[in-house]
Image 1 (cartoon, helix red, strand yellow):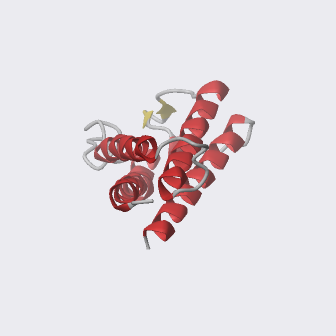
Image 2 (cartoon, helix red, strand yellow; image 1 turned 180 degrees about the vertical axis):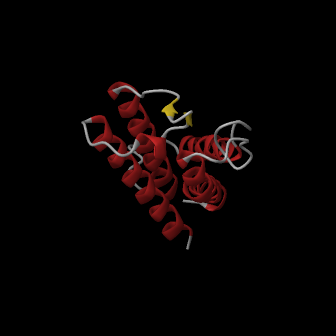
Image 3 (cartoon, one colour; image 1 turned 90 degrees about the horizontal axis):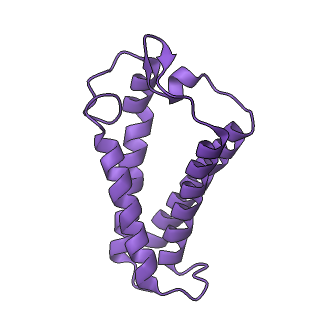
Length: 142
């Protein structure tokens, strides 16, 4: 069961990484739905490099989860992957809680397109991924 959870988590990370790669190379989505805004204007404009860096972090997250399960360890010890999975879980859990202003479950700004998507999709996904990374890190014994 833990293998199914871990593999599905890695596939989610890979899918989101591919989406970021697509965005980095020109495919655009309405930025108001994926970036926090104020007065209808995005609060930041992510560069191509920064978007690719996020994609790389997501790919590394997938690699850590799969490595924890025993796939593609490249000779590295299990503890390294477990620590990495717990690190990813911690980062995503903090993201789900948010900054108490613009992102996360406890944000104050709630009436923008991004805020609605964050409440319905982004924060719950971060919480799910955090819990699944923690579970994989905790219950994998290979």
